[in-house]
Length: 139
Image 1 (tube, helix red, strand yellow):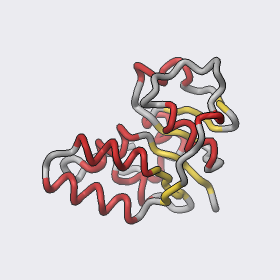
Image 2 (tube, rainbow, N blue to C red):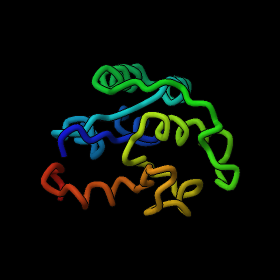
Image 3 (cartoon, rainbow, N blue to C red):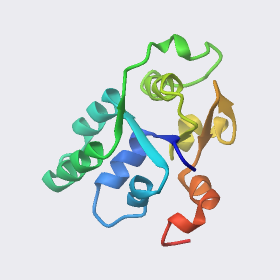
Image 4 (cartoon, rainbow, N blue to C red):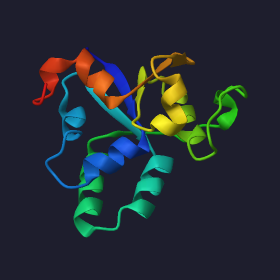
């Protein structure tokens, strides 16, 4: 898994920034995995996290994440059915050449689970954890 890039959706970042310890924190400490996020995701989380502890946790996670540039939505195929709020997440993952977009957003991304979009595999956190069981204490 050397030099492997991964992407994290806003809802994973939100969950990881919540009460600690939690089941999402190990994503940030997996050897050979670089967690990507975008300013768009950070902005979304900053608006939604109200607890001072959660906000502090968010900034700790951002500090150990790789910030990717905002992407032009032209990276998203017009046939992709995603709401406007989710399109920048996928576009940033594509632009950053991430291998995986990890998202628990079953409502919007569910039809894309297990599929690649511009070489980015869309996966549930559980599926990602199953592929790398030795990296997660609860497996």
